[in-house]
Length: 205
Image 1 (cartoon, one colour):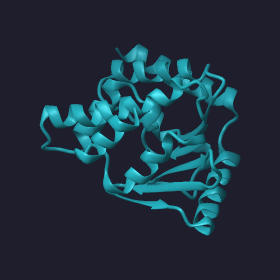
Image 2: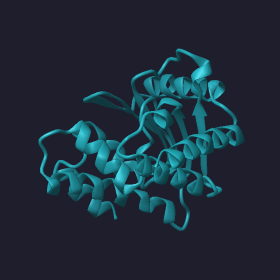
Image 3: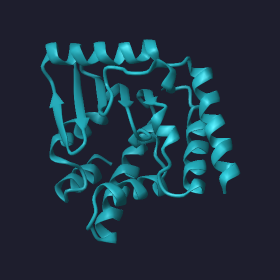
Image 4: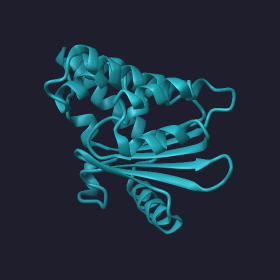
C-alpha cells in the first residue's frame, strides 16, 4: 500500500508539499484533520473526489484525473488495517452546504459520512455557521501523531501548502485544531446536521 502511494506521488497525483505527510500517514496512531470548504479527503467518495479534482485542476485529461482519484481512494485502506489509526475530523458547515457535482453525488457523499461515522475509530464534527468567523477559514490542516512518537502537520490553502515538523510549529497547529474543536458541534449534533443536509439533497433529486 505504501508503495502504491509513493508511486502515485512520483506520478504527480499528490502535491510535493503533501508527500511527507502521506508517507507518514501509515505510521500514524491518530490523524486529526480540519477543512473549511470541502469534505475531508479520506472521507470522500470516488464521485465527489472526481468532481472536486475536475473543478480544481482544469485542463487535465480523464486519465490524469483518474490517477488523482485512485491515489486518494488507496489512502483509505488505512482504515482497514489491523490496528487502524484514530481519525478525528472537523469540517466547516460550508463543506456540507456547497454542492460538488450533482445533488445525487452530494447525497451519496453525505450518506457515506454517516456510514463511516459508525466506525469507533472515526470521530466527525461540524463547525457550524452560527460560530461565524474562525481562525482557519479558507484552509485545511492535518496532524499526525506517529507510532514512534512525535507529530507532523500539513497546512494547506488554495494551491499552496506546507509540511510542518518543528515541535513549536506543530504545537501551534494543535492549538488551532483544539480551538476549532471547542467551536464545533458535539458528535451527535454534527451527524444530525449532516443528516439534515442529506435530506435536502435527496429532495432535490
